[in-house]
Image (cartoon, rainbow, N blue to C red; front, side, top):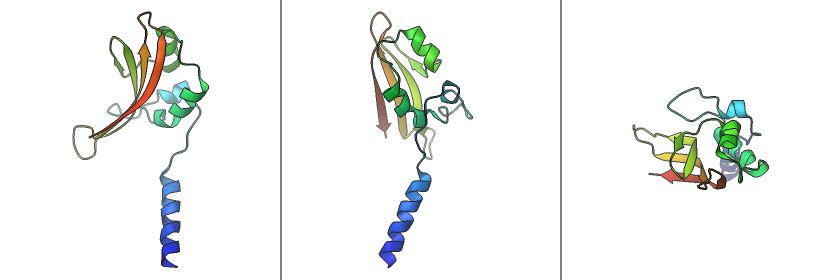
Length: 118
């Protein structure tokens, strides 16, 4: 009986803590309550964005029109922060980004969700 109660508690607590995926919405994608953290809804929208939107083949201006300004830019890629956890320190202990890789003509050739843990 005790095992059943523990299992039930674990299932309920897991379901409560999980946030379901959402459909991509540009306004919510960019809605940010704290400038130190990525916008609140990005992590929940990334699956819909990558599965139901044609991203490969977009020109850079089209990508910006769809997602707005990226969090980071370098010569071959642009990156949108999805999630970051600082733990109890000033340095992050977890980072999750959506990275878009561009051709020399500034066309999206691929994208990848990348995670880093300390």
